[in-house]
Each structure stands twice: as structure tokens, then as C-alpha cells.
Length: 171
Image (cartoon, rainbow, N blue to C red; front, side, top):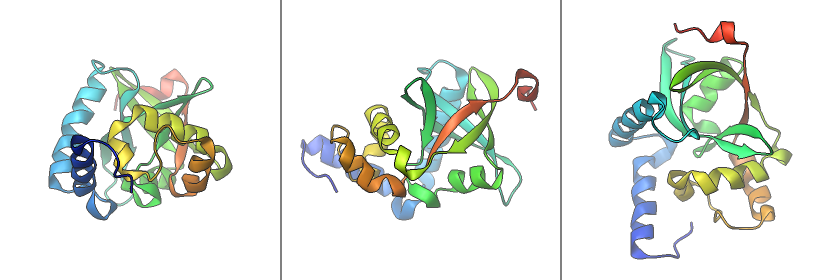
């Protein structure tokens, strides 16, 4: 774990790790996620802060959560800061990548999983934007690409591909 930095940075890292103890959000993280999902989906946040909506593989209900979009070579990506065990990752895989992105409007998308050998630059771009993810990834955002290659297999990444407009109508 990265522990260098100011006392404030160390406190922030410990706080974020507490919120996602055992790779799952605790009650307070769920409350925060609901709040930020609302803000991200409203369209008032920067365009790289969006709400992901995916059908729950067990409940069949739409699950909404705030996510940060990484941009690499003109392509948009989502990364799981909690790895393969994150519920949204498992739900995306169960729905064969079918999901919605909401940022002012709801857009139907397909999330295509990126092969491990292509994830390093995506992970690096993600950490530059996703300050809240930094405590969960054991690499500094400014580390060389080789450091990201070493951990890329632990952090799934998905390329966001828009579907035709007629399939993104509101539910």
C-alpha cells in the first residue's frame, strides 16, 4: 500500500479502504454511491463522471452506481477499482456487456472487456481521473507503465461502445 504523502492523504486512503472493506461497499459507501450516482446522472458533473446502470444478475433490478470514465486514444473505458469481485463487474459479464450510461441522458451501451495485455494505459488514465480509486490500486498514478502492467490482471477494464439510438429509449 502507498503510505507516503501528507497526513491528510494517508487519512483519505484509510477512509476509502474502510468504506470498501472486504472489496464491498459498507452502508456509508452505499449512501455516498447513491448520492453521487444521482449527481453523475443529472448531467451537472463533468462528462467523465457518469452513472452506470446494469441489470442485477440475481435480482433482475437495475443497479445504478457512480463511475469514472477513462479516456485513452479517443476511446472511453470503465475500470473496476475493486477488481473481479465487484458486483457491477459480475453483473456486466452476466448481461454480456449490456448496460446504460447516464449523464444528463440515458445511453444504451455495450461494455467490451479489455484483454489484460491492453489494460495498463487504461488503468493509468483511470487513476489520473479517479482520485477515490487510488487507495484500492497499489500503484501510484504517476508510476511508469510497467508498474501498471504488473497489476493489470487484477483490475478489469471495459471499453464503452454506444448502441444505436433507438435502443436507448427510457425504460
